Image (cartoon, rainbow, N blue to C red; front, top):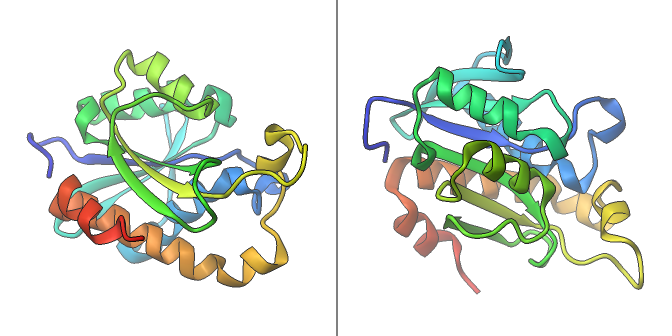
Length: 193
């Protein structure tokens, strides 16, 4: 899919530290961890402020990336990593949670707004460009009048947890399809009703 010799930079969004591991907001980290298991190897600290793992997915050179900063300021490490590997915006794939999609729904797109997602807002601001790929994992809306900020920082429910490994695997499949076959083919495969 990459138009140049630069790798695809696949970023999982989340918050660092054990306190956040099972949070809905950390789905990006979970998906990138699954991709890392497929690639083989271990993440290494990078000077850009992210943990990275270089490898191949679907025959394409990739750099799996987990910013070591909090979600709201992830733009610096993401852009720093992309610049280090000379990857343009269109080589960037960001995996993140999405409140406006039902739990487990996977949607892929290029560009667009941040829809109130502070991680995307930070990346767009740091990059100066909205035209990067997003792989959105639905976490659903908070129940009742719960503040969305509180909801995303809570762990998945017991019912969601039973399906989580399957859903993470499917989202990782979508990233592989995007990287290996392109956006349209990945959308056709994963945008099912």
